[in-house]
Image 1 (cartoon, one colour):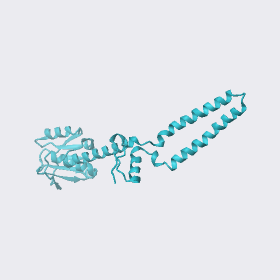
Image 2 (cartoon, one colour):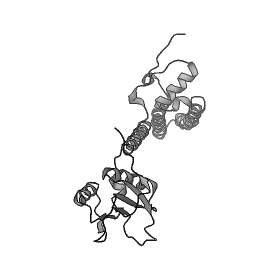
Image 3 (cartoon, helix red, strand yellow):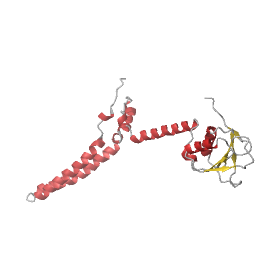
Image 4 (cartoon, one colour):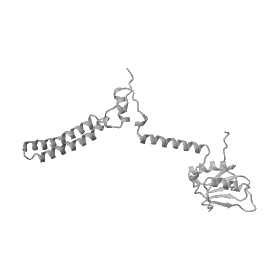
Length: 232
């Protein structure tokens, strides 16, 4: 069997003629009726034109019904019609990119963007818009407190407080995260903890402890989870 390429733009579809037929129907009927009115002296001719105008309507409807039944695949878009021809004739069909459904291309682009976003998140990047509304507390005893604040500011975080008694310094670099935050925000905060070179993190009940902050950088106590550092 010889392989033949069918170009969709060369396929003549009845749907392309339907609009022209509709315009032609109105034009012909209008011409017939106007002529029938002007031919007042020839009654038989006027009657013939009126009858012809009336018969044009059912003929047009029958033609449309035939298109919707017998030629329904041909009424679809080029890509669908080409696929129909491919299945019907078992011939290879080549569809140019310009004839593809624009909506399908947009869906594919959105899927690629979603995969790219997930890939960036997996590499340790933090989505600032997800955590920028949270209230952060930074331990006042940290020597790199200003560096930490600068990092938070780079992620559009502007709600920052200070905490920590004057006579007690933290023994480890621990980030405490409210257990009421979503798993996605916790995941991004862990990435932020890694960026801030925290030793580990823990989840705490800020409601029971009556703590306003959602995140405490430099909290006291041992970490509940370690921060995994990639070798790459």
